[in-house]
Image 1 (cartoon, rainbow, N blue to C red):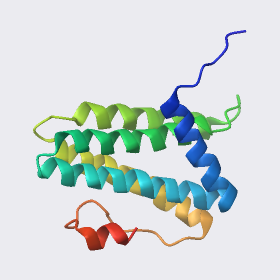
Image 2 (image 1 turned 180 degrees about the vertical axis):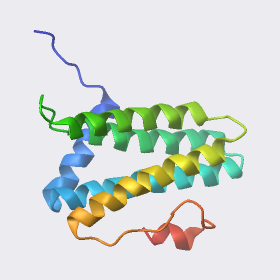
Image 3 (image 1 turned 30 degrees about the vertical axis):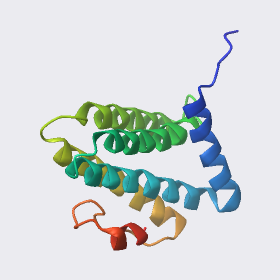
Length: 149
């Protein structure tokens, strides 16, 4: 049997999910994790627009860690197509986030990715009995809007 060695970022993402899940209902934890990923994408856009390339990369990496954590905690089984669909969605979004980095249209790509994650977030929010959010990426970002999440 092959032994799985967990990388530090992977372990960190899974720990964040477990900590959030232990403190609130799992569906609420999922919504909050989506909020973290979307906030990180928005902060990456802000950093990119300010010419802070390293901070842009750091924020995109944070968003990917959250998606990796969500993916790692899916309960896959042969009859659970939803888990496989979500896993594929998370992987595609992680690839898209990294692929957009440094591209001339990166901001538009990040907005599109963030809005897609927002749709998933709002679906989970409905299940969890939480309020949906409007687009968190297209409005002008500032310290005030950062606090709204």
